[in-house]
Length: 275
Image (cartoon, rainbow, N blue to C red; front, side, top):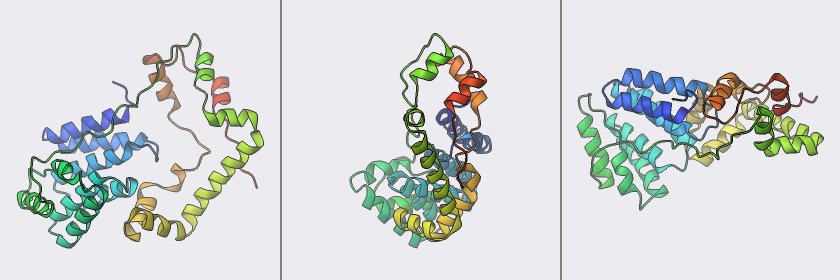
C-alpha cells in the first residue's frame, strides 16, 4: 500500500471507524491530513471522515468543527451540507438543522433524496436515533445512513522511462515550461502568489469575501484559516515530502530511480522573493 495515497489512507480510517474502532480510525485520518497539501481536492472528504469518527466517539463539537471545515472547503457540496445538518440535529439545534437542510436542498434539489443515505450514523450514543429521525423528517427521506464513496483514486497514465531524467522531461508541468520560456514572467507570478498569501492573512477583507462566497459565518472562516490552514502551509518557498514521494514513484514504476540532487534542482525552481 502506498503511504502517500491519502485517499486510501482516509478510507482505511473510515473503515476502522465503522468497524467499531473510531479512535484508531481518527488517528489514521489525522495522519493522512498531516501530510496532505492544503489544497488537495480529497481533503474535504477526509474532513468528513474525521467528523464521523469524532461523532462515534461522542465528540459532537469536534465532529461539527470537522464538518464545517468540509463545508468551507467544498462550498458547493450537498454531502457536506447534509452532514452539517445531521450533526446539528444530533446536537438538538433545530434552527441550524433547518438552515443547512435548506442549503442542502438549494444545492441539489433532486439529489437530496439520494444523499439522505449519507447521513452519518452515531450508533453508540444515546439519542442518536432521534437525531437521525429528525433530520430525515426534515428531508422527507429515509433509508440507511451511510457515508458516500469518498475520494477516488486519481488516474495516471503509466510512465516507464529508461532513466529518471526521461521521467522528468516527460512529466513537465506548464509552470516548468514557463520558467524556461519566460523566467521573468514566472518570477513575477510566484511573487504575486506570495503577495496574495500575505494579503489573505493580513486583514479581515479576504475572510469576509470567502464567508460570502461559501455562505458560512465569518467566525467559521476565521477558524478555517487560523486553525487549519496556517500561513506557513501556503507559502511557495518550501517543498516537503519528496523522499517519500520518490520512493513511491520507484515502487510503482513511475520512475526507475530516485531523482538526483541536480534533477530535483532542475524540477523545483522557486524564484527568490523580490523586494
